[in-house]
Image (cartoon, rainbow, N blue to C red; front, side, top):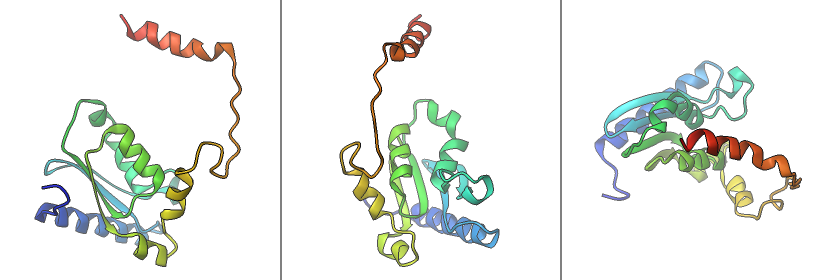
Length: 157
């Protein structure tokens, strides 16, 4: 069933769009997300960057934060429904926590027409570290391993 949409997928995309539209009415940006496990809704979220002055508070990130305890446990069948194509930051976070599937509404062309294109960030992320437009400098220090050793000792018992 890879890449096939179900009636549930359509219902969840419509819900993410509804959340996004309500968020705009409250002064927010046009993004909503619904996180599910199978056909159970784990959480719903909207872009809250305008509330918290937090540029990482995208709808998908907020949904991941809200479902944090659930996502720390072994899981499968987790789908993120997003009203628009996820940006590189959100996609990286979803990969990090093991989201199984992402379904989105507005594609790159539609988002870009309104100033919300994601491709420029994806293009930067394809470049090597330090060549993405931000200076990145490694500052080696022997004590850098101390927190790793502390973690290993604490969790190896």
